[in-house]
Image (cartoon, rainbow, N blue to C red; front, side, top):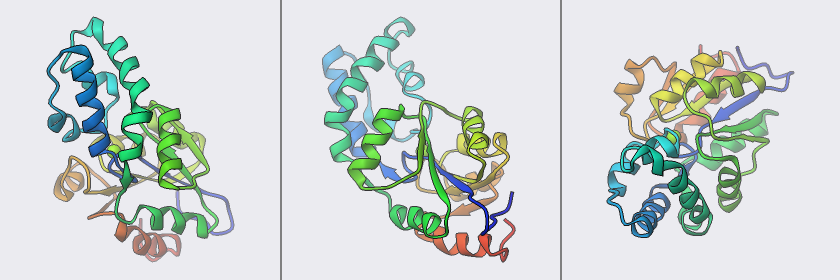
Length: 212
Ligand SMILES: [Mg+2]
Protein backbone atom coordinates (compact mmCIF):
# COMPACT_ATOMS: atom_id res chain seq x y z
CA UNK A 1 0.00 0.00 0.00
CA UNK A 2 1.39 3.37 -0.94
CA UNK A 3 0.96 6.56 0.95
CA UNK A 4 -1.88 8.56 -0.50
CA UNK A 5 -1.85 12.24 0.42
CA UNK A 6 -5.60 12.66 -0.06
CA UNK A 7 -6.54 9.74 2.14
CA UNK A 8 -6.17 9.14 5.84
CA UNK A 9 -3.52 6.53 6.30
CA UNK A 10 -1.84 5.17 9.34
CA UNK A 11 1.74 4.38 10.14
CA UNK A 12 2.31 1.85 12.88
CA UNK A 13 5.22 2.07 15.30
CA UNK A 14 6.60 -0.42 17.75
CA UNK A 15 7.33 1.07 21.19
CA UNK A 16 10.34 -0.48 22.99
CA UNK A 17 13.65 0.42 21.34
CA UNK A 18 11.82 1.98 18.40
CA UNK A 19 10.13 5.03 19.98
CA UNK A 20 11.04 4.52 23.64
CA UNK A 21 14.34 3.66 25.29
CA UNK A 22 12.99 1.41 28.02
CA UNK A 23 16.28 -0.31 28.85
CA UNK A 24 17.05 1.50 32.12
CA UNK A 25 13.46 1.21 33.32
CA UNK A 26 13.13 -2.47 32.46
CA UNK A 27 16.50 -3.14 34.12
CA UNK A 28 15.27 -1.52 37.33
CA UNK A 29 11.88 -3.27 37.20
CA UNK A 30 13.51 -6.66 36.58
CA UNK A 31 15.93 -6.08 39.47
CA UNK A 32 12.98 -5.25 41.73
CA UNK A 33 11.09 -8.35 40.56
CA UNK A 34 14.12 -10.61 41.14
CA UNK A 35 14.48 -9.21 44.65
CA UNK A 36 10.79 -9.65 45.46
CA UNK A 37 10.68 -13.24 44.15
CA UNK A 38 14.15 -14.25 45.33
CA UNK A 39 15.07 -15.53 41.88
CA UNK A 40 18.04 -14.83 39.61
CA UNK A 41 17.20 -12.64 36.61
CA UNK A 42 19.97 -10.99 34.61
CA UNK A 43 18.51 -7.69 33.37
CA UNK A 44 21.35 -7.27 30.86
CA UNK A 45 20.20 -10.45 29.14
CA UNK A 46 16.58 -9.29 29.27
CA UNK A 47 17.21 -5.90 27.67
CA UNK A 48 19.45 -7.44 24.99
CA UNK A 49 16.46 -9.30 23.55
CA UNK A 50 13.53 -6.94 24.12
CA UNK A 51 10.51 -7.40 21.88
CA UNK A 52 8.66 -10.61 22.72
CA UNK A 53 5.91 -10.57 25.41
CA UNK A 54 6.84 -10.35 29.09
CA UNK A 55 5.59 -13.87 29.75
CA UNK A 56 7.98 -15.25 27.13
CA UNK A 57 10.90 -13.50 28.84
CA UNK A 58 9.90 -14.59 32.35
CA UNK A 59 9.66 -18.22 31.21
CA UNK A 60 13.45 -18.11 30.74
CA UNK A 61 13.91 -17.46 34.45
CA UNK A 62 10.95 -19.06 36.25
CA UNK A 63 9.02 -22.33 36.21
CA UNK A 64 6.04 -22.02 33.86
CA UNK A 65 3.57 -22.23 36.75
CA UNK A 66 5.11 -19.14 38.39
CA UNK A 67 5.09 -16.95 35.29
CA UNK A 68 1.53 -15.49 35.49
CA UNK A 69 1.94 -14.27 39.08
CA UNK A 70 5.40 -12.88 38.33
CA UNK A 71 4.04 -11.05 35.30
CA UNK A 72 1.27 -9.53 37.43
CA UNK A 73 3.79 -8.37 40.04
CA UNK A 74 6.10 -6.92 37.39
CA UNK A 75 3.22 -4.99 35.82
CA UNK A 76 2.16 -3.66 39.24
CA UNK A 77 5.65 -2.19 39.62
CA UNK A 78 6.20 -1.09 36.02
CA UNK A 79 4.40 2.25 36.11
CA UNK A 80 6.16 3.38 39.27
CA UNK A 81 9.64 2.10 38.49
CA UNK A 82 10.15 1.82 34.74
CA UNK A 83 7.99 4.52 33.19
CA UNK A 84 9.74 7.48 34.89
CA UNK A 85 13.14 6.15 33.72
CA UNK A 86 12.07 5.80 30.08
CA UNK A 87 13.46 8.22 27.52
CA UNK A 88 12.84 8.95 23.85
CA UNK A 89 14.85 7.12 21.21
CA UNK A 90 16.76 9.53 18.95
CA UNK A 91 14.44 10.91 16.27
CA UNK A 92 11.26 9.43 17.78
CA UNK A 93 9.40 12.69 18.29
CA UNK A 94 10.35 13.95 14.84
CA UNK A 95 9.22 10.66 13.23
CA UNK A 96 5.80 10.80 14.89
CA UNK A 97 5.48 14.48 14.01
CA UNK A 98 6.41 13.80 10.36
CA UNK A 99 3.50 11.38 9.96
CA UNK A 100 1.00 13.59 11.76
CA UNK A 101 2.12 16.75 9.95
CA UNK A 102 1.20 15.06 6.67
CA UNK A 103 -2.28 14.11 7.82
CA UNK A 104 -1.38 10.58 8.82
CA UNK A 105 -2.43 8.72 11.91
CA UNK A 106 0.16 7.23 14.23
CA UNK A 107 -0.71 3.85 15.68
CA UNK A 108 1.48 2.24 18.33
CA UNK A 109 1.33 -1.56 18.09
CA UNK A 110 3.37 -3.13 20.88
CA UNK A 111 3.99 -6.23 22.93
CA UNK A 112 3.69 -4.10 26.05
CA UNK A 113 0.24 -4.08 27.66
CA UNK A 114 -1.83 -1.12 26.47
CA UNK A 115 -2.12 0.74 29.83
CA UNK A 116 1.67 0.78 30.33
CA UNK A 117 2.20 1.64 26.69
CA UNK A 118 -0.12 4.66 27.10
CA UNK A 119 1.62 5.70 30.33
CA UNK A 120 4.98 5.51 28.56
CA UNK A 121 3.77 7.63 25.64
CA UNK A 122 2.23 10.16 28.01
CA UNK A 123 5.43 10.40 30.06
CA UNK A 124 7.41 10.98 26.86
CA UNK A 125 4.89 13.53 25.60
CA UNK A 126 4.30 11.58 22.38
CA UNK A 127 0.84 12.13 20.92
CA UNK A 128 -0.49 9.19 18.96
CA UNK A 129 -3.90 8.29 17.56
CA UNK A 130 -4.29 4.74 18.84
CA UNK A 131 -2.50 2.12 20.92
CA UNK A 132 -2.79 -1.63 20.47
CA UNK A 133 -0.99 -3.61 23.16
CA UNK A 134 -0.07 -7.16 24.14
CA UNK A 135 0.59 -8.33 20.58
CA UNK A 136 3.78 -9.67 19.02
CA UNK A 137 4.98 -10.93 15.65
CA UNK A 138 2.26 -11.90 13.21
CA UNK A 139 -0.44 -10.99 15.80
CA UNK A 140 0.58 -7.39 15.28
CA UNK A 141 -0.39 -7.82 11.64
CA UNK A 142 -4.07 -8.16 12.54
CA UNK A 143 -3.93 -4.84 14.39
CA UNK A 144 -2.02 -3.16 11.56
CA UNK A 145 -4.54 -4.38 8.99
CA UNK A 146 -7.48 -3.21 11.10
CA UNK A 147 -6.02 0.31 11.16
CA UNK A 148 -5.20 0.21 7.44
CA UNK A 149 -1.57 0.87 8.30
CA UNK A 150 0.57 1.69 5.29
CA UNK A 151 3.85 0.90 7.04
CA UNK A 152 5.05 -0.59 10.31
CA UNK A 153 8.21 0.69 11.94
CA UNK A 154 10.01 -1.61 14.37
CA UNK A 155 13.38 -2.83 15.59
CA UNK A 156 12.83 -6.60 15.92
CA UNK A 157 12.65 -9.34 13.30
CA UNK A 158 9.21 -10.06 14.82
CA UNK A 159 8.23 -6.59 13.61
CA UNK A 160 9.13 -7.57 10.04
CA UNK A 161 6.85 -10.60 10.41
CA UNK A 162 4.19 -8.23 11.77
CA UNK A 163 4.46 -5.94 8.77
CA UNK A 164 4.26 -8.90 6.39
CA UNK A 165 1.20 -10.31 8.17
CA UNK A 166 -0.46 -6.89 8.07
CA UNK A 167 0.27 -6.35 4.39
CA UNK A 168 2.30 -3.22 5.14
CA UNK A 169 5.74 -1.91 4.25
CA UNK A 170 8.30 -3.10 6.79
CA UNK A 171 10.48 -0.24 8.01
CA UNK A 172 13.16 -1.15 10.54
CA UNK A 173 15.61 0.69 12.76
CA UNK A 174 18.83 -0.91 13.97
CA UNK A 175 18.35 0.40 17.50
CA UNK A 176 17.18 -2.85 19.07
CA UNK A 177 18.57 -6.38 19.30
CA UNK A 178 19.36 -6.66 15.57
CA UNK A 179 21.97 -5.11 13.32
CA UNK A 180 21.07 -3.42 10.04
CA UNK A 181 22.48 -6.43 8.16
CA UNK A 182 20.37 -8.88 10.14
CA UNK A 183 17.22 -6.82 9.55
CA UNK A 184 17.99 -6.67 5.83
CA UNK A 185 18.66 -10.43 5.69
CA UNK A 186 15.36 -11.06 7.41
CA UNK A 187 13.57 -9.22 4.62
CA UNK A 188 12.84 -5.71 5.88
CA UNK A 189 11.76 -3.41 3.04
CA UNK A 190 13.60 -0.46 4.59
CA UNK A 191 16.49 -0.47 7.07
CA UNK A 192 17.43 2.74 8.85
CA UNK A 193 20.26 3.20 11.34
CA UNK A 194 17.83 4.98 13.68
CA UNK A 195 14.69 7.12 13.59
CA UNK A 196 16.64 10.30 12.84
CA UNK A 197 16.64 8.95 9.25
CA UNK A 198 12.87 8.30 9.21
CA UNK A 199 11.74 11.75 8.06
CA UNK A 200 13.94 11.73 4.97
CA UNK A 201 12.79 8.28 3.95
CA UNK A 202 9.14 9.10 4.73
CA UNK A 203 9.18 12.20 2.52
CA UNK A 204 10.64 10.23 -0.40
CA UNK A 205 8.18 7.39 0.13
CA UNK A 206 4.98 9.38 0.47
CA UNK A 207 5.83 11.45 -2.60
CA UNK A 208 6.55 8.33 -4.61
CA UNK A 209 10.30 8.93 -4.91
CA UNK A 210 11.11 5.75 -3.00
CA UNK A 211 9.56 2.30 -3.56
CA UNK A 212 8.93 1.62 -0.84
MG1 LIG B 1 10.88 -3.17 19.94
